[in-house]
Amino acid sequence: MKEDYYKTLGVSKSASSGEIKKAYRKMAIKYHPDKNPNDKAAEDKFKEAAEAYEVLSSPDKKAKYDQFGHQ
Image (cartoon, rainbow, N blue to C red; front, top):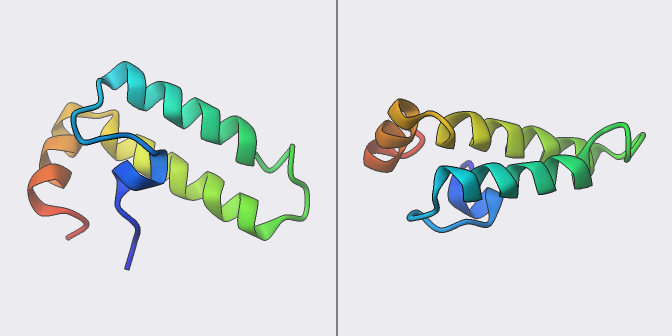
């Protein structure tokens, strides 16, 4: 099962869009494949963060995720 998107980015459910963006950018820089060549774990973390940000940065997707989770 996938990890909770809020937990992935390290933010609370009440986080503002700015806080979500800041948390994503921090993770993206830390785990970016260019900074971690040949590190599969870092690449996976980067992809998880990007997926979480894609959902949580969109008001519509975020509302659906808050209501239904990963389903």
